[in-house]
Image 1: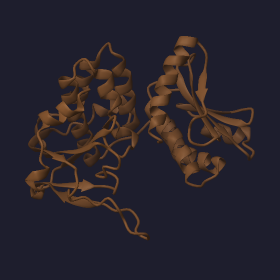
Image 2: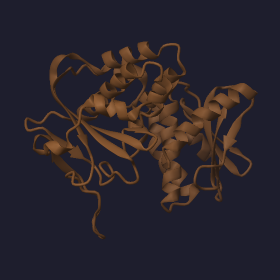
Image 3: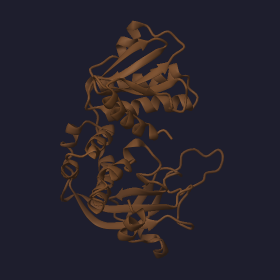
Length: 315
């Protein structure tokens, strides 16, 4: 699974630091790519085995304040410069690999994504829209609850947060997952963005944790909850992972400008089991599917208590 590559980078960082040399892995799902970690600069890198000419002039266009691009034998090497942008760099590399797996040549996939990403690394600017901010806030609320409930399992809790990586479900622990949704509609309605979000697949358990918020009301904000979690994780290995996952969204400093306040009106927990109102298959010829899930109209048989969910997780 593509999101596993984030974990591979984290593992290689530890290995590179211990051995004092660069390490890499070709286990990326395609032989044209390998990912690695440079212990000297303490940054991630990726090698792309190319078949077309990459001139010094072209490579220079992709060498920015944030990253550098060079030829290393038959490989184009992409290496991060800004140590506070690991998450965004990793996301870019994974997009390149994903495009290749979907049919593009490694050269074309790399050029396409680099062209789209170069401006970001030059300008060092990014951001989240209002709905994205609220969605992230909902995920962090659950993350904070899990850290409070499992105080000695911070690394396991944070490693299970998959929302920023584009995984099917926002939290994944072994064969149990949780999808988080937020809404501000007067009639609480969660937007389900794909047929996979509420698909149990081979999971033992899948839960939906939804929140109904009044934005621009209350006192809690993204900067506040991020600071609380950072304080809770201070001095642990989990803090580095948390920071890197946040960085997939945008630079840490950017979060301080998100001053929307949130007031929780209602919280929901559902067991996504047989009979739950979800679209998990689509007929041939149908493209992307998204739909609204009316939270107040879901039958009581699917409702569960948060305490019971945490008990089953048993981290």
